[in-house]
Length: 340
Image (cartoon, rainbow, N blue to C red):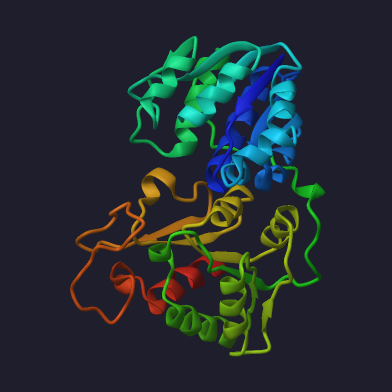
């Protein structure tokens, strides 16, 4: 059975979709998926052995220069790839108008979320088969239910399995006693205070662990380099691909992460992780799986689910909602993870 999956972004959302493919393969061992995904994330679907083809989408880049995308033939090439096969099923796992339009371009029966379940209800008009799935569930649960309904098997009760072929991931180094700090994220108010990272780093290296710091932007690299000044046992990584970063995470003793896509990758690899949540809700989009500890604030306005902090009262910590999740609290839970 050939199935087309539309799940373009973001990194966490793409990772959340992997367990649904594993579920489907349990019932249909010969199933083969083609996956449409943003070009920055093409490595992720390829980690799953039942993905035979990845179709890269440059929508984020095309938005900046729509005319160029038309002139250079990229948009026409995408349409050609979408229509190259007759798929048994086309599943839109995104539930957005943009993903629904991509679904319409493909050849095959179209499946997606119902009006009341899709993030953008108008998207449901594009599908021939729709399913009402409770929104107040974790994203992984919702996608697994969608695939079960679309492909016609019972809703899974087994724990989610990302299906990542860990043995194919590159080995980071001979280090075996390191902790990864995932300190970078997209929203400014999802950042844990830099002074907190410094205090936690000092505690971790004092206990004999190394710290490894990945980065994805100039600002993140500068933050990492500043942290590394605290101790020779703190390593700033070079710029790495997603597959190389997966190898780093796979070999870690534990991970401390803000709400970021790489935190979801650590969970998919079943690496023990402390997740730090201020304005976002871990119950709906937090890291999911064994060894995952969510430290969520009980601040009065959290989780606000807003990109901009609206808290106006004076606070010694910014974002103020992280004042409850200080380095002492994090180290206490992290040390418990490390001794298990």
